[in-house]
Image 1: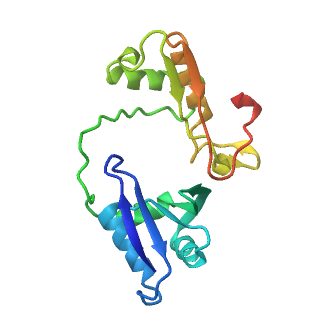
Image 2: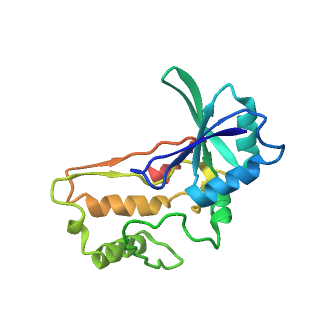
Length: 204
């Protein structure tokens, strides 16, 4: 399997790999090539021709998952994304391939085990205050879009929402309540490349 790697410099966390079937690598070498691309180029996504069954097999066997099919410049393409758990395992203990261009500030607040609505809301407000307050991010009357990551049923058990992989719906509700007095409009925007969930009544 041979091909080329396309690096988008304006989006440093995004990498694409285009493959084609060629007798230039021995059988089993594809995994080594992907290992190298992940380590050297932070490969997290790949595009292949939909008709290329060999490349499809290689990517799926390695741990990528297909996310969508589309046409571009007359070509029928399939896009893949690496599974996050696999990516983290591959880069564990290794230095980033490229230095991140700036320093970010992260706020962390522990919520009591009961995770009551008021406790969650207070925790969010504490984080915002530690980062300069809500108005450092949102001006009066501004529209706000929230992308909460509530797209898959991994946080469900026997049809009951348990939290975990997806964002706690109580956190989303509390954040909306904090924003409502300030914003002009709040949009909760969500989409999924995998299985969608049916939210429980308590989330509505």
